[in-house]
Image 1 (cartoon, helix red, strand yellow):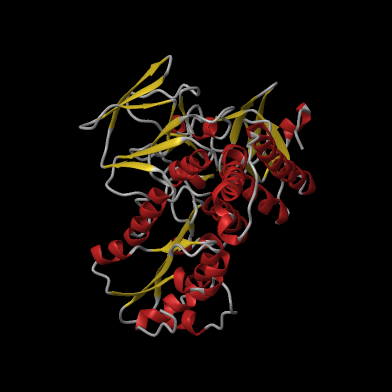
Image 2: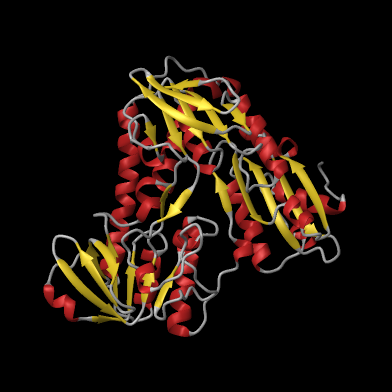
Length: 469
């Protein structure tokens, strides 16, 4: 419920949450479930933060719509289905995306009302360790026994490059183009760059991805990244790896992109997808003596307590894996630690998913990271081309890779590129949460025919026992 009554200023809240993204709103709801008096300050009119409004959800809606369009134009003939002329209504596609977002933001609004959380629209500034000034339509001061910072992150850019929102854009603007660009240069080959590059490439844009490192998806296992690069190239996406954008000049015809040691690139639009930075401006945290690291992320301990007693922080604003579900887990754990004495997040079992086609998903450590730490490993792989369900779907590109400790057999990482990889990964996440071995995973009976059998076969192959590969 949005609060405008000045009498609310007299309340003393058990918890005041700054930011209503997937970390903040979940933390607020959990605290309310525990019987606490909760307030949440959010600068935007809608709840859900970047993820729900201009991130995870709208991008997945467009990825699904663009995938269906591509299937209609190029993917049905092999199934014996012939279609006539396929046309694209970009306005209708965008309207569907907006409707999905609207449904979910309304859902969060309902949950706030259901849990009797006081919502304040405006920007928050810390005055003391227990007082926050909120500036919106009116200015007010709120007092709380504990304050939780969940202000998230915003798009970072390249030194010397300004995002103007028209020709040089962030992911926010790339989710709302009113027409399909003839050409799009994407700076950054991480999840955001590859996902949004995929959307516009499927819809007809010529997409070139420029990545400073020598690989795509730098945090993924190298074997998986190599296969992702090959499959995305096969789909028509172009890549310049080990390349540095030096400058971007705007012209009436589009953009001219200077790449060190390479030919000049031209494009209608440039998407900057080179990472994110914490939202701490005007928060007043450092002015109170709060500690941040050299990149501006708030420093918090294992219980999410900052250097200021009574002020906590979770999610993107403290760094680490900048993922919505990681923020949500931290929000719940922080609140439970604060009010029940126990809360925990297993950071080795936080999944990552890239919603390209095929999807890329992983949990745990990469093989190269483990070897750099001299941890002895053994691996098993299985390709979806040996999986009956994948072949029946006509979607058999990709593989599953399982990594276990050489001596104990404990699962250390599971990496998947293939159909429904994100959903298949949940089994591996659960297994790792319970400290399972690769043998445990291999001995689970998997239904036939299912994509999940590929996970079983990869686990079997850790000991060279795969039946079908």
